[in-house]
Length: 187
Length: 187
DNA sequence: TAATTTGTCGACTGATTAGTCGGTTTAATA
DNA sequence: TATTAAACCGACTAATCAGTCGACAAATTA
Image 1 (cartoon, chains in turn cyan, brown, orange, yellow):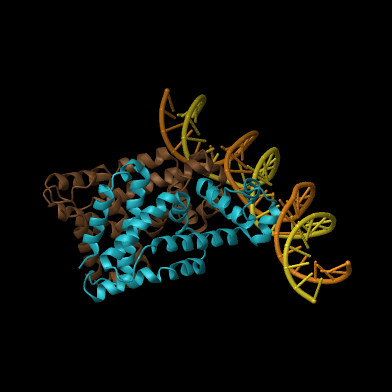
Image 2 (cartoon, chains in turn brown, green, purple, cyan):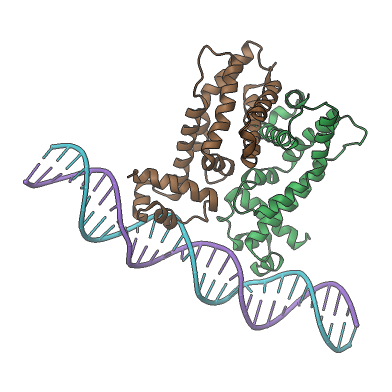
């Protein structure tokens, strides 16, 4: 049987996405997770701590997937294509996690410290962008701006494929999306 | 003195963004808006109706700004540049409204009917994209995908400028952002 | 083995909340 | 003016919630 802490996080994720944070009583989380409320508060001092932990654990999982199959010797384009495809792949396999970020990365329930910690984990991807700028393969735009534009673009792509899942079977639309992505950032 | 209904909407917006939906009691909205709770429920049957109305009114306001200063005779590129700049301008002038969409457009508090109604209002912008595809000025990618990619890109740009407001004084970064945007979608 | 720590339970509580209701005031209409 | 309707008020309530507590069980350490 699954670890109770993990079970609580998994159940919270689903309920927070489907019902919202304050509309999800801790009693319901405990019930659906098959634990007592006391156990929930044993692992997480407060409900806020629970959602902040959830945020960081999902971010960790996501980053691990995003940088998967990237080889040091790959070209910048190949690396960024892999990140792009990994992002869509992750969102497809972890729909609740992706929706969680869509809903909560701008919400007041996640505190600034947690958001900053989450951001730190992107350093590997930021390095790829910096490398690309040095070699003039990418546009000479501030790394932070390039990053936000790219992330926004990917989020839009994911939103489209979430609402049009059948379009993922054939790879052409996804390839088109990457072409547009690349044309936008390449120098 | 401002209309009470309007005052309630304005106050709700601020509080929902700063505190979240369920963490904002109707009693607090009423208090801050300077009305009685009875008045709030006179205008909005439930709290859900309130937030859904808010969503649609903000969307209406946004669309009106986005298509501002667009002339029928403009080129596709000029039209889309205007929409791009209008979007950033709107977000800058209406930060709460923009954050509201970031937080709530994926949230369970806004029902599907409301979201669909909001989407309908984009028809004018969708037409520009379709025109651009017909004349092969834009990439031959499905309109819905182009739209979501574009919207995501713009949201990312806005997020960057929200966190780096000083970068808006000089227009160069904003122009760079549009160049990247245009390179991405142009055929 | 004994002692201590960690995990688990669920009934309980003080505080909070969405929405109601009966009434008053203001505005519109006949 | 008289009548009706719409706007507005705020005290009130039944329901709900985050977090506590004391007790017991399991695992870890001495």
